[in-house]
Image (cartoon, rainbow, N blue to C red; front, side, top):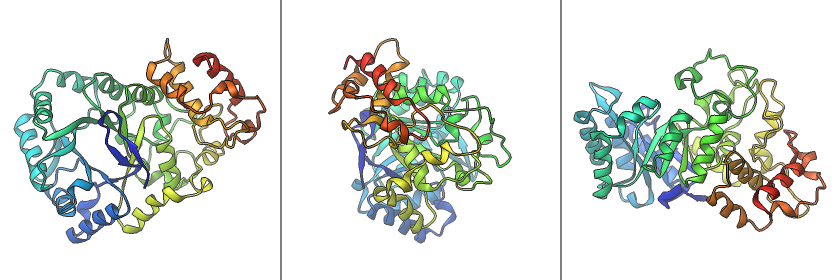
Length: 383
């Protein structure tokens, strides 16, 4: 299992993670075995936003004797009230719910304390001088949580969270369908069977693209939720593209976004764990989401680099996808961010080495003018 550093946390997380939101619908013993099976496959990062006692008990029992093998995202503000999930900032519920999380997970620390579900500007503003945030900070100072993160589905709000300097990582919803939708859309709408995607939309929404860039520039890592859009992307009749994608293609899409360290998949069976983990040894053809999107009857990324790697191999060994990624990260800024420049200059080969043969362009499914972009990149970075 490949691991990636999760932003400023310095934690090395498995590319394939564990999203546990379906655990409660399984018998406890079966669910515990599923979590332990995932650990054996090399998965080491899990998210526990779930406030219900059963899910938390399952995770706690599954980690017994191997707590040190897991990186846990535990949420502040996800509470269980009268048998129901309630998102709240009210400390009379927040504090007991977090203490319950520690108790049921059978641990005295949480690796990443998550500010749960920050989706509106009003909510984020209200948190700035609040008992809620002071409690999170107190837990950090005491070492009860090792790092601070936040979860969001709104790129505009998530960007503000990232730029605040408070968090070291975010949990964000990433998939090719969501990426083409404006941030004003509500997640509940996007997952509705009858939702009608605007056929005029083309390419990634600018605010989502900017969020990924800001995360990369600020070394704020991303773990991915909703990577399969609730399974809708697998069915051509339900997919907004008019074609179905595979789990491997969705995983590859998420892991090629700037700033992304891990995709947290939901599992019902060991076979689903195996399918996700198979990503590490899958062929380029199996992971290829680009050809599917390029030929889909609805929507197009025409002219935009999605960092899919179809352009390989390069005659002079340029890593074209990563060079394009750094160019996109830098091009929207008045000046090239120092972190992006540093990462670019560490590449073994820079854009100025491009010989303009355009062989890569013949392989690009989106018609990206790669040779022209290499020239622009060389001018932007000076080499």
